[in-house]
Amino acid sequence: MSLPNHDCSGNEQKLNQREYGKGNSDGAGVHGLGAWFGAAHRDIPQIGHHHAMIIFFFIFLIVFMTNPKLKIALLCNNKMAMPAMQRLINEGLLCAVATADTDPEAMHVVGAMCGNVPYTTIGCNGHKQQLLDWVAAAQPDVVFVITFPYRIPASVLAMPRLGFLNFHFGLLPQMRGADPIFESIRQRLPVAGATVHVMDEGLDTGPILLRQELPLSPEFTYGMLSGQMAMLGENMCGEVLLQLAQGLAPATIGVPQDESKAKYWPKVGEADITIRWDKMPADDVIALVRACNPVGRGVPTSINGWKIGVVDIGMVNLDGDASAIAPGTILAIDHQNGLIVCCLGGKAVKLEVVYTSEGYFPGYKIGLFGVGQWMVFS
Image (tube, rainbow, N blue to C red; front, side, top):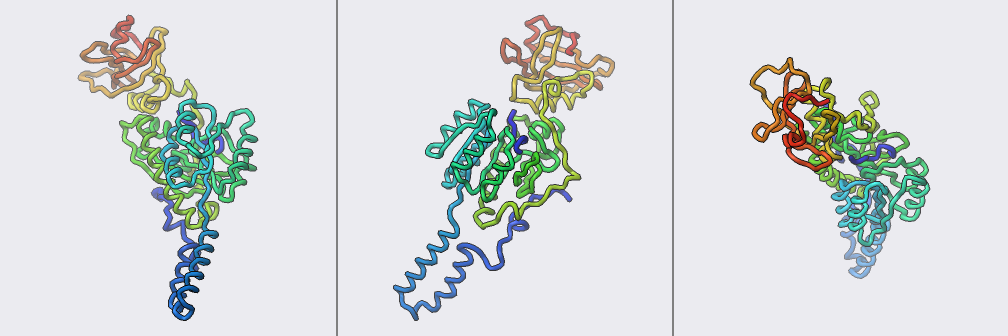
């Protein structure tokens, strides 16, 4: 699963441009100078067309010099960054890209997308100096961070004039941590979302620029929600670009996070994603499996010492009362019914797809390996 930048890192409302993106009262850039030129244009006949063109040229030169195109560098570690990255490429704003060296597939795809944009990889050993050298060489105005696993030192965060902005795929401050997508699904939250915040020395603690919610269907898997988040990130990238183009400094318009609502969710280990049939009701088992699909090879469980992974799962309505049956007991295992397992509280689930060292297949096919009805998962 991806690692957003956790190491670099009333009804909740989106912090929109209208409320937090106000410019100076006298205008700025094209708008301020354009208004001035429009007023001065009434006097052009007095100085002649030739002189007017000279004045217009110098005005254009001043506008260009005071509103240069932004140079944006990108730190990423996951294909979720690609829609936003493509937008930055299309708008000619991307000056450098770096990925961690932990995901060969992401490294290959991101490197191929870069074209003429300088691309490098950052290793875990010595990453602080590598990051410093990378920013020094690229000289960006701002760095966008979209899933990056290594913590960025304060000395590097201070280098770009507009700082570092983290695209965190969770709703801050409630969903700080390594993998808010996983936690949003596992906890069966009604909404997920993404937050863009200024990066400081803390973990997902900086002032918030944008915050957008996304309805979370109980049917969503980790992969499905990741795809939705990638597109949401691209949309939020456009909103941030609009703020920056207006000369709004992130550090001055960001809204501090409410620490009374803050919660940090640490990275999970295998023990946290193993099905505990004797402690987890059916809804929790289903949520856990969906929160891990397609990451890894399913949620682990065991039967007779044989470890398998549950990849896809669904709820089953039982005709009778199964509350007296031990959780983890196989109630059916055949082609017609599938692999049905009793859960805590008497509900049952159907293990639709499983993984073993022999491959991926429908759950009931583990019956070919000697697993039968009334056997118990542990």
